[in-house]
Image 1 (cartoon, chains in turn purple, red):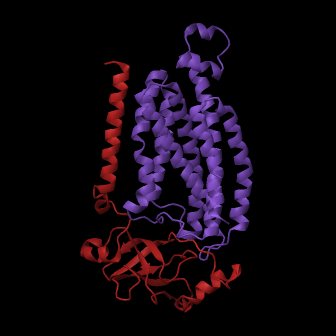
Image 2 (cartoon, chains in turn yellow, orange; image 1 turned 135 degrees about the vertical axis):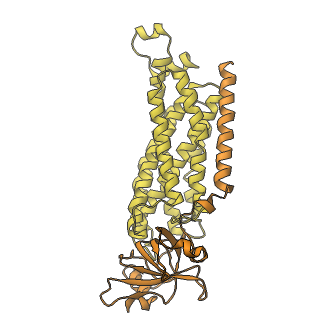
Length: 261
Length: 158
């Protein structure tokens, strides 16, 4: 299967993201396109990974969990990296959009992280012989899950929106240490987990199935993050709105732009 | 201080802390103080100090070193620095059931204790997979992949 096809799949999400930067209104259509693309690509990804791709020479069929484990851990790293970008953006230019998107990306990143690490543990038992060991890659991944759980807990416990936004932005900015360490842990330190594979070390058919799955999960990440962003935005609207707005019905998320920016 | 300048200060401090933490993790010689496992040559270089505490040893299963007892309940093998025949190696003794992929010339990490008779007694035997993913070779059917690997390690069947 040609790799250009796998790369072409990324044109839709990437193009949409760029278009949204120029024309904000596109987001309402854009997220639906992403949801549809995810809904179509995910079942196909399952077929490609479970049936179409060849078995692995040493691991047999067990390795097929790679098509779920690797893309979801990538999405976790992407989610928390987005959290870093939003956190820094908030500190530079106080923006409730950045704060709400930071909350959304941390939570979605944490979700993918929990699923990805769990899948990794399930894969570890038949191949390594253990579900868990404290090697640098696994330890740093565990730190990531704990750190962003703490980040979200801190957001819940801080009632003043200004204080919450500032301190969680500080945590989110410092937090970039974690995804970078998770990614490079296998290069910098001796680990049980293998170093990153490249297209050269992986059979082309497997590369295609993996790219397809990664693109499907990327569309899912965008859909989840946007939905969670709308929830965060609506909650902020209730908090940040001036007192007279509170006497009427709660404002919808569309009112936020007028009130908060 | 205005909230805007306070926020920028917070950003600079957080970025500075992040950069120094990353620098420390990447170049701070963490690897020397906080190692996940010792290689055979590192373990042998420790001498007396390696005897007693629970440690991890990592390396490659030396070709021709795998010895099962008659009942296949006990396993002896050597963990070496590399594939070369003259690579430094440590004798390992295990009552564990090795993972399916265990064979000669595969990476392993063993957890246990090193005794004064120069034998490493492991209570946890882990196999690590390389970053290579390949389909079975031409002519190998899906069912034969395990069989063909066993043929490559005749010692394991003694």
